[in-house]
Amino acid sequence: ENFRRLTGIKRTTFEKTIGILKEKEVEKNRLGARPNKISLEERLLMWLEYMREYTTYFHTATKHKISESTCFRNCVWIENILIKSKEFKLPNKKEYVNNLDIEVVVVDASESPIQRPKKKQRKYYSGKKKRHTLKSQIIINKADLKILKTNFCNGKKHDFRLLKESRPWIPKTVKMLGDTGYVGLHKIHQNSEISKKKKKLIPLTKDEKKGNHELSSRRVCVENVLCVLKRFKVISERYRNRRKRFGLRFNLIAGIYN
Image 1 (tube, rainbow, N blue to C red):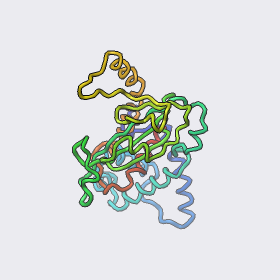
Image 2: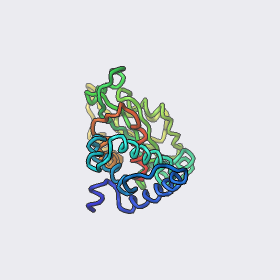
Image 3: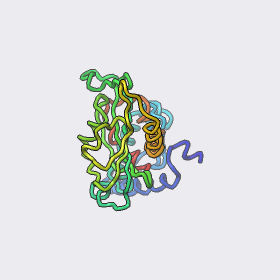
Image 4: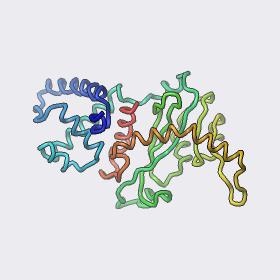
């Protein structure tokens, strides 16, 4: 329990990750690469600490008594290997389109704050959060809460527009649930259900409020999944790194969660 609190992952997941990295480490040593000063387990703990706490490379390197550049290279090496492995890969289009067990999917989007860009500031300024953000969209299977698809854009883009441009290719037999940010969802996916939005002079009736409450209780699972992902502060706190590798890290965390 304390190990999961410290690293954000279970011990079994940690051991599985070590097995994947050891195979690549052996291949790297065969090519005559310089041996690393710190062990593979400590390097993985260092990367998990960086993703979990999102301290600077300088602070992480100082804690492990290595240089800042060495810490950066090790973290990038681990990310590049894990994102290509089959264990932490999100399902492709064929896998979830042909999966007959999927009956209901839930879609939602979340925003992560970023540093103010030097160029194209308006593109990343979010009117919802009143700051510069990157938007992440996830589609999950309601039955097992696994993430099927992710997509990313600047924070200014509307949730429904991001869904249309991402083309999720959800089968017509699968029901899709969304919130009020997806008004017009039935136009691109007829088998869908969203919360009803009140108008300026026409308040919602009791039946409509009751229906919204029931729908919210059915789609709250996607909020819980986002909460689990944001335990890694690299996607919940203000993202530095000039917006680079954000999608890669989000997909990697989603693959580890699955």
